[in-house]
Image (cartoon, rainbow, N blue to C red; front, side, top):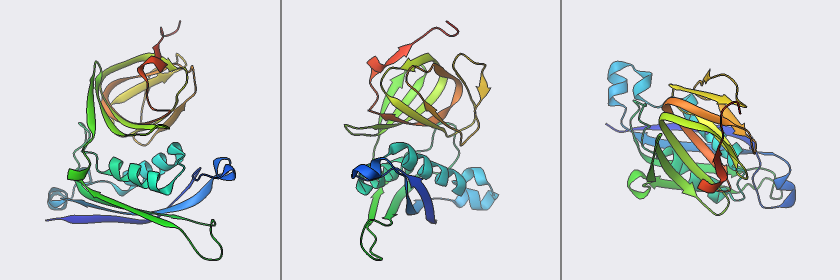
Length: 232
């Protein structure tokens, strides 16, 4: 039995657009989305963990739009669809999404009441992310352009203390089970939905078993990630 989860009128204030003033001032856009998935187990068991929590979906949409700082609605739509079609993380019980549709509406850029709107849709079979093996787990490569990269880090171990010399990195905690640290501070349990944005040369790391959604600007480059001693 197929279920469609729809969420309408997600409003996000973000940097989006190609014009100079759009790169300096946030503007509000609207997202409407639909996801197809099998919720038979969730319905039988009355189990939130076996479907996809609406609040978690909304957090992902908001994070991607605010952290991506996209130039085109088309780019934002493609990244959102690819992200929502990603298979469940290792620690997630939720069912896989088999089809996704995202519509993004932009306000105040055309005369009168005219509003540009972009719709992007795809099935799971059309979007197959690459996966890279790491010493500390795996990385799902969701999307990469010349300007940014979107990744899911599936940690099963420890990402050592490190800094980035050039990349701007934003991260959203997707699942429980991780602790993190920054600026050589103490380990801190990371709650689902927490967003962090790392400055250049700011030490940080993670340990445990869980997943993080990550946006790097520009795309991740191994040479830009420099391991540093903790407390040194």
